[in-house]
Amino acid sequence: MDKIIKLENIKRYERKLYEEEKSKLTIEKYIRDIMHFYRFLPQGKRVNKEQSIAYKQYLKEHYRVSSANSMLVALNRFFEYMGWNDFKVQQFKIQKTFFCRNDSFMSKKEYERLIESAQRKGDLQLNLIMQTICSTGIRISELSAIDVKAVAAGYAYVDNKGKSRVIFLPKALVRVLKTYLSKTGITSGPVFISSKGNAVDRSVVWRRMKRLCQDTGIDAKKVFPHNLRHLFALTFYRLKKDLLRLAEVLGHASIETTRIYTATTGEEHKRIISQLGLVRGWGGACSAT
Image (cartoon, rainbow, N blue to C red; front, side):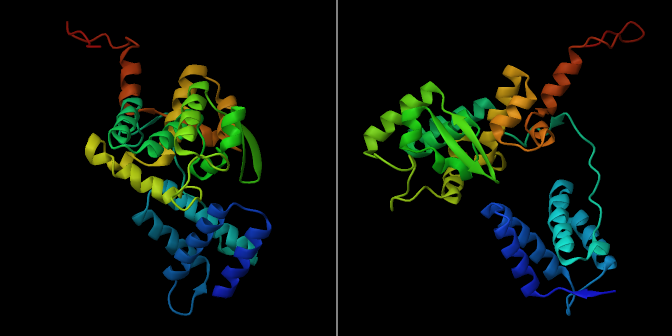
């Protein structure tokens, strides 16, 4: 039997997510994805299994599989809330991969070029924001947890997605942040604040990072705060080879999420398999390594 989605249904679901203490970003994403489906529906906003399947096909044609699956998760959970379980659709199957595209993530050298560029431009705050995220692995949404008390103690408490964890600050980071606090005269609250005294906004950080691309020659698709977290994760894993510990540091509930962060680039993968020395050539030809 067809059902009709009303905006008041979506509003009630939003309130339920809030009561479940979902994070602000999670709530915003779920509602955004549900509204995307709402706008996809024809006039009358009638829902049935056929419409769900048609929407899934639409997502397949217009979005990456990972993005499409994320949107389907939000929609299926809304259907569960409404009691419309018959309208749920399966996610797309994704073959797990051990490496990522070279143009996906930021390298350490590219990170260093960004840091140097911010320094040259006199943007000390952005310089230290990038260093703080990259050396601790925190999310940009957790940046406000790095406050004056945390710098003094050498660690910060972070609450995110209903979980609490301790973030330790490298000694070198503590030293430069103390110098920054002394230079700026900040004596309490978040280390990184706007001109109005509020915690710096994530979108502002994103835009300021993008402006460094022209100066550094780095592909703008790689330059955003979350890729600094990726770089931390990959560097940590290469050093310690401890996926469980890394998951704890990053605040991941699932170790499968952490595996995504430790994927090496395709070039690195090719270099590893070339070093195996298992191609012997033929007819007198030798393989190149």
